Image 1 (spheres, helix red, strand yellow):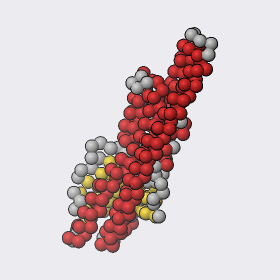
Image 2 (cartoon, rainbow, N blue to C red; image 1 turned 60 degrees about the vertical axis):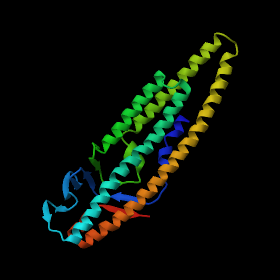
Image 3 (cartoon, helix red, strand yellow; image 1 turned 180 degrees about the vertical axis):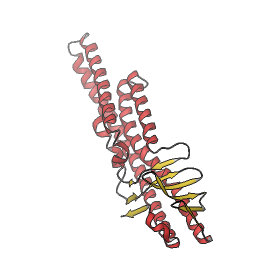
Image 4 (cartoon, rainbow, N blue to C red; image 1 turned 30 degrees about the vertical axis):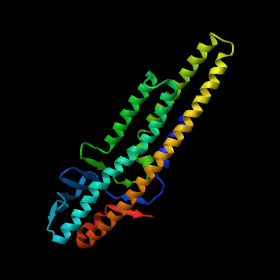
Length: 255
């Protein structure tokens, strides 16, 4: 159960559409910046002032309205991408943690140790997006590659945590068997059977819970896909209205 729980977060994302960001995006309360290799190519101030390659572009009312719509969409959808990605990882980590808690006891030393490590990992995953209050950063990438986007640099660490978790469970099993062996010739065998039944019951309940959460997450992913498609259409209109922006096409969608 521990070994198969991690892929659940990947299964949460049914292929709705392919969303690709051609450039990096930095968002703070006052600015949106489209960047490449640390250089700002496009900057939008307060959703109404546009700079391309450091030069301000004079905008008509219609252009300002399109720029405002595009900015609003970016501010809404980028945080959603961060949220759904972290929530997907949380499903997997929560599943592992609940198995530990179910077998070693809620708030046991083993469970608390694993929970602390998972909490730290989730914080560091969020930090990968340089998120601080209303500040976000996403590098150029295919937003459907969640496994690479999130776990690439954390993959070995997650695997180590799961291995440690398995070790904690086996330690509890061993202690229980030894305790029973001191009192009965057949105590260890009985304990193993009881423990196996308990694990199966936990696994069944957990699988149902994870599946439901994954389905809910999949619905969110579908909504985000739809909103990014609409945002891509607004970006196309913006490029038509401001031709100088065409070479900085941020969003690409394919079904």
